[in-house]
Image 1 (cartoon, rainbow, N blue to C red):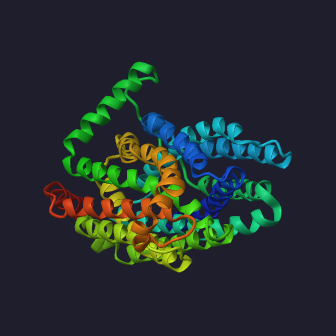
Image 2 (cartoon, rainbow, N blue to C red):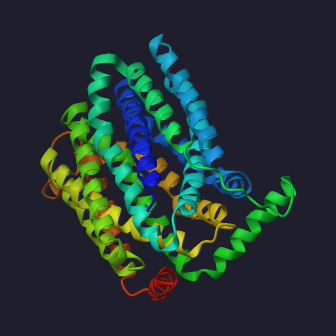
Image 3 (tube, one colour):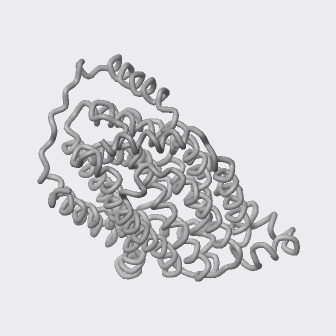
Length: 425
């Protein structure tokens, strides 16, 4: 791959680490302010559901306008929004209701950014390098997950939410600077931008995806899995903060980041073997479900770090295989919309998981578990947070079941052959 790609990787690693710090700090601020999982659930639900609804339109933009320019615009908008949140926090006027309109905006611009970014990656490498570049930028995200929580917790403890946001904005500008090194490819479109033509663009992408049975099957399975991961996204902070502090939460989340890094290194080293190997993706799903069960059985930072390491490595390898398949099969003219549909379908159930997790977790924590402690304590132990842990356990069991059911899925086998044929040529 080109040396400029590695420079781009470095810039995005710095930028994404800053973003991870600020979102970690906002999550801690919400829980410290309210003491309820349902409050965090509400904010995450808003971000997720808005992203699902608006995601396909981001794909249309990515296929009609220079992708590099769009990425820079979206990054700058997000940076301005973070500055406003930082201003409110600095003046002690930030409230949970005040975060809601920002959550709406983040839902729109974050998903548009990631859709455009995914399509942009397919522009800068050759077909036989798609799995390798997916693994490379998975390592960037892994580093951000590794450093973000620990760095965010450290800065938050000394300088509060405003200090974390300031670091985020500085790193965002650095990331933008590295993107400017690339030339925007000229985008050829058959028609002008209008509501009618946007509709036809989306219909064209939908009809294309219907014919890709392997990709469609894969993304539908991952949609169910993301529904389950939506639960864990809400449950993990209150489950950990119930028996430790923000530093403990940072350690666990950083262990996940460390695992992402190991997983991306493994994927990078084995990229040729992983290219189109959907069987590996299935086994990674099984291992990921088992990691959730391990993390739930006792209130232990050690066990949760084991969960983070196992789940992080398996999830990274699985995502690399999936991303490589999508980048291999999509062509430049359809890639933005196809990847937007991928994101929309894959994430469409996550908001439901996020929405259910908060109230259901609070019910199990404060009502159901105390009434059934003798029955449930052999599974998840005793003490604060064990109601959340019981739901964590159930999610892991269902997750394992999903991948067992798809062990011999014929559409995934056909997808493996399709990807290998394309990349070998």
